Length: 395
Image (cartoon, rainbow, N blue to C red; front, side, top):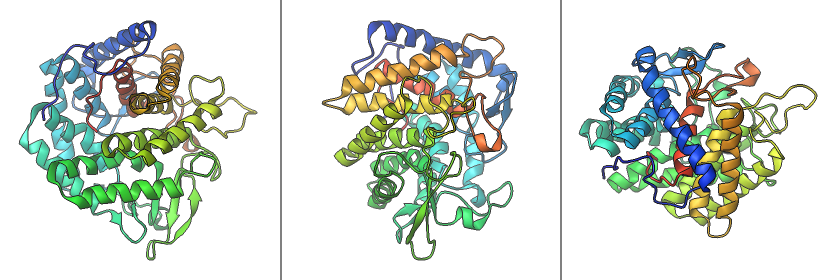
């Protein structure tokens, strides 16, 4: 069914308080203006990571973040019905066709890549080619499901831009994959093919059992024996340590379980998202922008991750929409995170900046911190929209 475009105020759920809603509305309008103003510079390229002067470096073919600018353009089109956003988003379709045509480019991030591009285009325009491409991507993602361990294999030992250590890649799940399950749930709804749903549910249950610790913190990754499927143990890749809690991983899980709960009606998934959110609330203390890792050493300046705040805020508003008891708690926490982003990370009024948020942490251990990130920008827009009561998205 085609999503309806409409005014910024076309909300169907309880929104934030009037004061917050006015501020969020103004921020969302600035996002739309920024996307329009930067089109002549960005063109059909896809932002990868920010530079020191708040310009972009751009994705090589097949990058996992290739869809996040497209996702922003589709949100802008949904809000404005302006064909300039439609045309800019559609112009990126060859990037996604290339992923489908190149086996080594296909990993668990097919969900990110195709939910925010081809599924979005289908929902907004009912264009048949985008529907066919999204289903093809879902079938490829389904092929990564390992029934012996009930998980979706995250990475490839031979990705398109150079090799990865096979021991690192094989038999590994990561927190980010919870976001990619949406493509499988969508494909099940479109086709009735139950193995799409069963693989998504299997992976979600394994993630809950293996990545979420008993204290409701989370591992970034978990390894299985790739032959037998037997569990090996939890580790980190982008966090501070194996036993630490990487904030964006926790945010991926909050949003992912909230989204899975919304699609399936599972109380188990909803409870998991609430427990993870409560733990993040505890770990943040009085902070309004998450530290990149909640266990990072406190004896030196701590890098913040605006992208973790944006992802988590979007997930919290989903929890507020589904909760019968703690709706006000999750909405207030989401509002607090948005306030932190607007107070200390907002670039929407900076005419020199090509993105929306500063102070993102892509991979602190590799030196990629304090920068713009296209996924932080996408989830910032999604969170602002959810705070205003919008419920129609692409996953």
